[in-house]
Image (cartoon, rainbow, N blue to C red):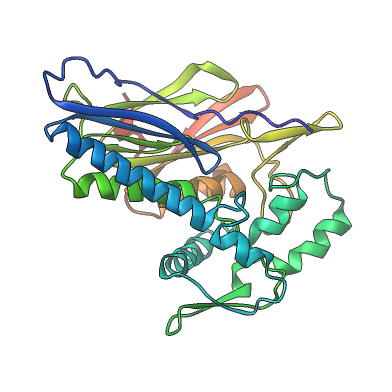
Amino acid sequence: MKRSSPLITLLIFSLVFSGCSGRQSDRRARFYMGTTMEFNIACSDKSASLVKEAADMAESRISALEGLLSIFDGSSVVSKINSDNKKRVVKVPLELFRLVERAKEYHALTEGAFDITIEPLTEIWGFGPEKRTVPDTQAISGILPYVGLDKIRLDDKNKTLIFDDPRVRMDFGGLAKGYAVDEAVRIFKGYGITGGLVNMGGDLYCMGANPGGKDWSIGIRDPENKKKVLAVLKIREKAIATSGSYENFYIYNDKKYAHVIDPRSGHTVTNDIMSATIIADDCATADALATAVFVIGEKKGLALIERLSGIECFIVTEKEGGKRCAMSSGMGNYLK
C-alpha cells in the first residue's frame, strides 16, 4: 500500500504581510491532528505580546482537542473509549457529549452519509492507526452491524453516551479539524483580533479582511494538477472545507482506494466526484458537509446544499470526456 502525503487542498492568496506599517502580525505552522495547522494574523492593531498570547492560546486549544478527539493518539479520550471492550454507558466530558450531539444532527441531515461511528471501517480499510489490506465483502458485512450513530444514545441529564454494543467505535476525522478551526477563531476574536486566516490542512476560516483591506482570495485547486487553480473565491467571515479523493489514498493491487468511506455500505466511495468544497458560516459545518456531499454524489449533494441557508458548494467531477465543475446556485457570489 502507498498513501499520498497530506497537502493543503486550497491555495491561499493574499498572504502578503508587507506594508503593515508597524501593526502586529503573527504567522506560525505546527503539526496537529495529522495535518498542518497554520495561523496568519493580518496586521492586528493589538500589541505584539497580545497577538502572540492569542496565538499561543489558540494553539494550546487545538493541542487539547487533539488529546480529546484523535484516534491516532492512544491516550486521547476518544481512543480510550474506543479501546474499552466492555463499554455500555460512558460518562464523557461535556465538550465531547456536545460534539456527539452535533454529529447526530449532521447524521440526520445527510441521511447517514456523515457518521462518526465509522472508525471500525476506517481501521479495516487501512486508514486508521494500523495499516491493513483491502477487506473482503464478508469482513465488511461483519463490521456494519456496529456502524451507525443510532447505536449511540445520549443521556443529557447524566452527560453519558449509551452504546448498543461495545464494538461501536468513534472517529471524529470528518469534524475535528473544522471544529478546531472554529475554536481557534473564537479565541482570536475574544482577544479582539479580527483579521487573519486559521487553516487546518485545507479546512479554514477567513477572519475579516486581508492585509490590503480586501476579501481573502482562496483558490480551489485542480485535483489532478497542484499548480492549477480551477476557481478563485473571494471570502470574508466564512469557513471553507474540502473533501477529496486525491490526497489521502493508497494503491493496492494497482487499484486506488481513497480514504472517504460510505458508512452505509462500508465501502470506499467510488462515485465520480474528485473534490467537494463547502462554504459555510462555521468550519465544523463545512467540514462535515464536504464529507457528506462527497459520499452522496453530485446530484444529491447539490440538492442537499440548495436546501440549506447560507451554505454553498463547488464540486469537481471526472466524467467521460474529462473534468467538469458544478456549483450551488449562490456560489457565483463568491467567484472572482
